[in-house]
Image (cartoon, rainbow, N blue to C red; front, side, top):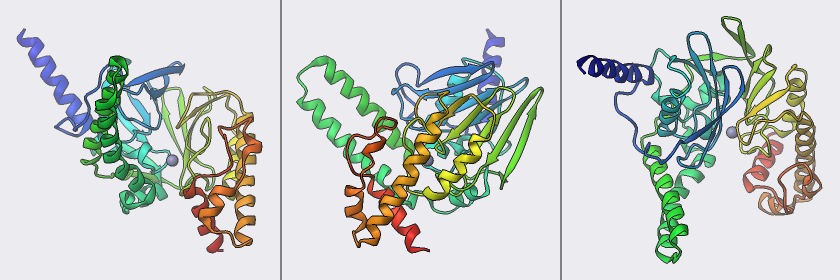
Length: 345
Ligand SMILES: [Zn+2]
């Protein structure tokens, strides 16, 4: 019994050292697993949220001979904490390394839970962005400020819902949103403590893990994580299974940077949103979309159309067979971004 207590105390201490935070973050409560781990190769997992906790982006993790490398750590300290907790169902090896594919809140806002001894690797732009004031950026502001309204709306819907099963479902959604809000309030954006500009490679036994910057695209500092032997590439939002957010993007350069991705020899993509896929034609579809969205928005701007109006008018429905597009219009944040880039020329 005593031995058990000592062992579990060591376990707690170990977790605290690895996680770097003596106190569990707020908002980690959830019912059932928070993640589904999709094993794509021996030791290579794609982690997708189940909905029982707000995690937003996907992460991936690589279990090596003696350690674990995590790629992206979700939307909040709570989400990252629970990820580490659930990784323990797969392995007890310590997480020594985290790679941030880019600085966006849904991929890097778990960074703060890791101890200073854990290497957090990202592009030097990602470090600058996270050292700056990332929570003041419109993308995060829109997300954070929307949470109280979502909570209020859910409460009203729960009160008005007559069906017990539907009410229970809404209650879960409310719990998920309240927990996320509680964790966001504890947020301290934490930058990578190791940076790269073009490429670095980690070696773990027989495994080679390349971290590559392929040119500006989704942000000015996205990296992909490429496992040449396993023929797997982890792409964050540089390439997702659908459309990526464009608020900090360089759409024209992005299409070209994706050509560099095509040159890598891989057959499985683990994206930052959506399921893993093997269909490389998705890269072509997305490149075609980026080129069109750029030229269409530029054309409207030349005609004197406002960014707000252009967001409604830009018609990308010709891509709807290959991408999740239902009707004309693009997100206003995408139109604003393209206008900004054109103005800066
Ligand atoms: Zn992103």
